[in-house]
Image (cartoon, rainbow, N blue to C red; front, side, top):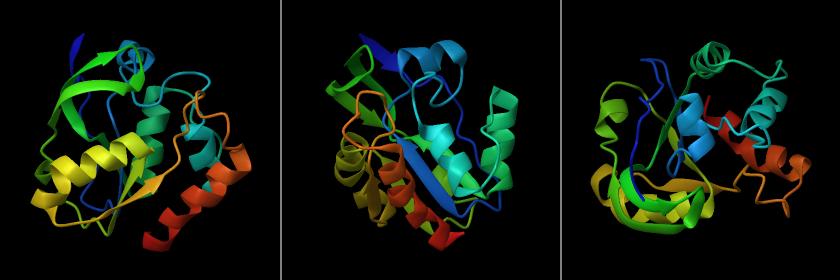
Length: 161
C-alpha cells in the first residue's frame, strides 16, 4: 500500500538533536502521532534518559520533545509499505529536511533503526551533507535489544544537547 506521511515535523528554533524514524506505523498514523504503538519503547527510553515521567498523550509528547530541544520526524515522505514492516518498503521518497535544518541549530542527526539510517544515508545525506548515527529500533519487533541496551545507545544524543 502506498502511504504518504501524515504527520508534521516537531521542532523549535532551539532543537539541537534530530531524531528520524522511517515512516509512521499504522498505529501511529491512526493515533496521529509518532511512536504511538503501546509496545514501542521510544517514549519510555527518552523518559528514562531525561529522568522524566513517560509522556502519555500527544500533547505531552510534543511538549516533551520541545522541552528537551529535540526535533522529531521521519526520513520518508511516502513509500509503498506493508503494515509496519520497514523491510517491505519500496519506492521511497524522502522528506525535505531543510524544513527543520534551515530553522533549527541541529547539532546531530540520529536514526531510530537500521532501515531509517540506510534510507537517510542513500536519500538524504547527499543533500544535507550531515552523517546520521544509527540507533537500535525501539519497535516491539526488536526484542533482541533490551530496554537497558536501548537506553545506553540513546544516551549518545545527550552529548549534543
